[in-house]
Length: 282
Image (cartoon, rainbow, N blue to C red; front, side):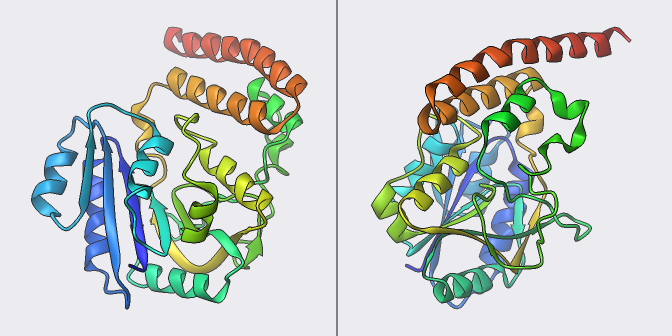
């Protein structure tokens, strides 16, 4: 098997259907398999996959186990030489998979790679990031980017050239191709992260092990961006982000940075709470 595509889905039935249609209507010159891991959707996603895409390998969870744990369920069964983690709100173009696998074959040093992500208007969606650093994450915890938008420019690589190939720190998990040798060496994603930071953590592990994390503009993929997230109340997404950020810093950074960030989140969450209540009032 050349490629295993893994889609973790949570209440994105319509977009998941478009995603699967695009995958199975493509005619790449290689063998591939598709896993759908459903995290206890209540919108009929499981039934849709069973009835309309019997060729997909369905794993239906009876609870939401998170992004990392759900992907790992399929990774353990995957037979592909390459593993593509693909969000349900993505849609490949007819040549996406062929170009991506060809590129990976030509770049054996790339352990993890992603491609050019575009929206429905063919506008580039920025997704390459530097590894998180203490001062920038402190700014996020205190909500300073709302006051000083440019404070995160270095972290989000504001001037990154998405038309040129480059070695990078990390790429977004929505289109995340992993070489099988990397998984054999590192294992699956760190399940301590429920959502957020798991792909950053995996890129960090890969680079520490001597692999390159690469961005290539050669393939493209359509990204509808965060359709699962919009279903989650904002306060809850903040807690997920906070939890994952702190776990990342506890794992990779000095203890003092972890503890200061933990303290900084208290006024940050208070600011969010006050802001949300003011919006409701006015």
